[in-house]
Image 1: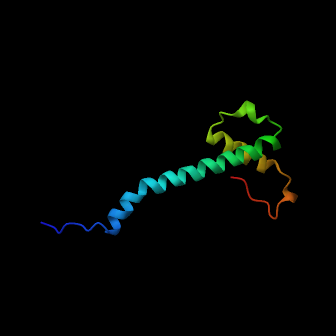
Image 2 (image 1 turned 180 degrees about the horizontal axis):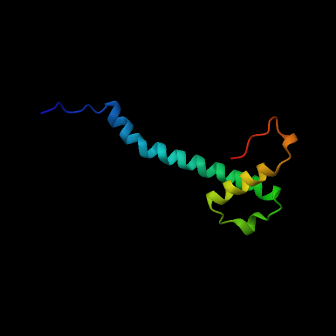
Image 3 (image 1 turned 45 degrees about the vertical axis):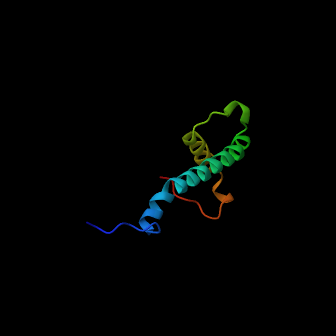
Length: 82
C-alpha cells in the first residue's frame, strides 16, 4: 500500500485549480473577443446591434480580413500572408 497523499500535495493542488484556471482563461478570451467585436464593427461600417450573435470565429475572421486590407505603409513592417 502506498502512503496517503497530503492535502498540500502539488499534484492535487494543480488538479483542483485546473477548472478554476480554465474558467478564468475562457472569461479572458470572451472579454477580449467582445472588445475586439466592439472595435472592429464600427471600423467596417457595420451596426453592432445587427451583429449581436456573431460567432467567435466570425469576429476573428473579420479582424484578420480588416488587418490584411490595411495599406502596408500604415504598419512598421508588412507581414507575409499565409
